[in-house]
Image (cartoon, rainbow, N blue to C red; front, side, top):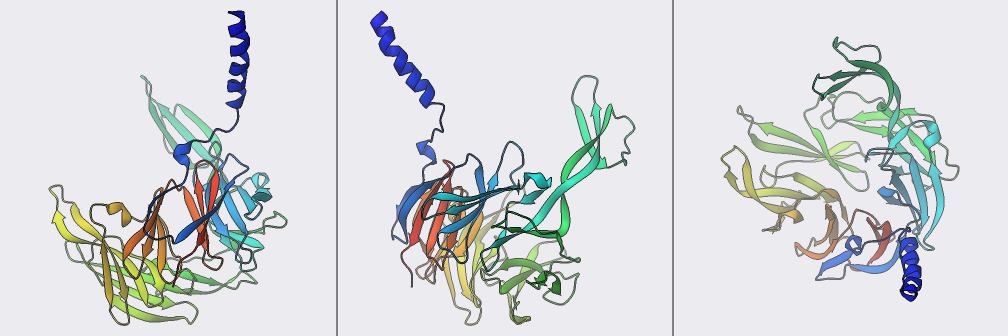
Length: 400
């Protein structure tokens, strides 16, 4: 028995102490589940030096081996806010900068935009500290409700508990700039946003608004911003037309050229009015749509349909379609859709990544286990992030 204990005890200690480290589960590994063509070719994997989950990533516009990451500290904040950014060197796999902004007493949206020189990122969506009044109403048998009011404006008389609290609230119409070299934030800049669905053009040197653009020059326009091209030059506006019973009868679209400040295309919905509508620019004259066919009205008043993807050239009216069939998730785009090159596109449905051949109108590659991703067409690179806190680097190997 003593010999057994002598052998067993070291094994037990090894097991316990090895279990204290970060344990990675194979179920969170990236998996290539379908490959008709090797559009994306594996390069390498980088393990991140953090336990915080990634919310957003972007390639530097000037350095193919650098990305900026916004992090999600789930214990402290909700999923849409952060005060933590990292700069990663993809070549060495090492952390270049770890920027924590917790001393500012503010939070920022997880989405950001790189400056053209790759030295700064723009943060739109600032959550500052605001004093509020909380009223708790508790029942005699437990349970109850909580109400939050503007400071000092509680209008409920039967509060069982009243207290003033500090909350993080969105500061509207402002943005700030984070210097990646110094880790310092700029003063807040005013957006001067008016009513309506509009595009605001900024002077990039002085950060003042130069003009506000709506598709019909009306701030109360019925045209809503639908999508923006990846280069930021073109905007697709959409106006939904309904009949007296509020059924959609048509969708009117206008493509606006921001650089030249003019409308360049105007057209009605090229497919059916059912489905998600326009999803992405392929180029200034060509767009991808998601739409429904074989419409069936259900007993509860809903609509069932077959999902399809369609590409239309607005100039020639040439159309191509792809039926999603039983696998409707292919058409249910939940995360960014991008052109990898002239031939292929990429998009996500939750943790599944699809690579789509625009010429042959079919899925040619598929990955699973992806929590987030980013790409650089200029550098021909794609980075996938998984819940194991790993980055998987892929080269864009095929194109036209």
